[in-house]
Length: 485
Image 1 (spheres, rainbow, N blue to C red):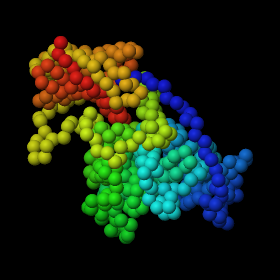
Image 2: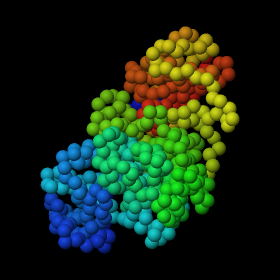
Image 3: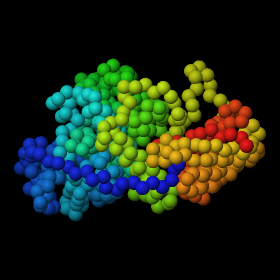
Image 4: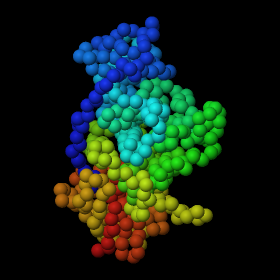
């Protein structure tokens, strides 16, 4: 189910170039003629942290060079941390970093030049995107955002002008104001374009991955309609609408309208994660899901999670799924279901229990950190086994799972067998509800990824088995029916 998978390291993308100099503005008298071994040819943009130049390498290849405004020790250290995190993002998602210099009075970063207009320029010049063009954009940018979040980065300024439409697909760029989660970041305060700020950012809360999902959805509305979902007049009016008004999604096709509406929820806890969003775009049966409890972003990307076997397998799983979605969504034609309504629900949210009907209360539950205070009720006692299947498209063969539950215990033996190998371990009870038990699966003999297992009563002789990689990316579930022996 959740084991090692080989992931392609080099996807072979190469940029093509046309008249790239026409995209740049002339250099100003104060601009340097060159930086490092790169000759500057013009200005591509300027922001609060520096200037982005079009430049050429010694062999004539176009590149983008960002010259940072500040060169103090703190800025250099934070830049190094961000670049470390960026290295773990797949190259098809953003502009590849080619060179970095922190030796001069002002550090600069050299990156791949993406030969294509921004989403803003594309819509302004040719109008809203339609059909396959829109679908490829939606899947490509959602995949990029999922990869960015998996690297532990919050972008903080996702907007149409930061999406470049390269010849091989969209790239999400401008990480100059992106920051890794934690107290030390390159910038602080309210950052972003008003129409694409999430409500919690306007209210002064730190940006999170959920804020990025909100901004992504607002950008996709712009791509599909040519306008922001919250208008484009005065800043106070736009901010007021973001906080209090419902977005105008009337011009969107049905399935896409549903997806974007969930992403534009005022409550960040009701928005899907980027990873779950990515999967839902290519699988209409994937239900909406909020962020996993405790968040899914690493606090310090300099502390790599690949130092343990479990972390390595988890990162491989994320990379493999991202690669699959890109292959489905961009290489061979987008397999989107944006105009269809899902008719079957296979799994529930990776972070929540099933929704409670309006006006009713959820069943009582007791939670613990797995310290042995909880006990398995007698109604669940017995040996349960059955076949389970995974939503991971790289692991579709399924597995045989067995759980032995003993009344009064707080742990239980657990096994999983598939055609390749076996996993054995002990699951620890963490939550008890009337008809459901939740367990934590930690390190185990056999190499299955740790996660959360829920067992829900289904009549007297069956349990619904659900495994999720939570805490973790929350990308994959393993589900099936276990029968009592």
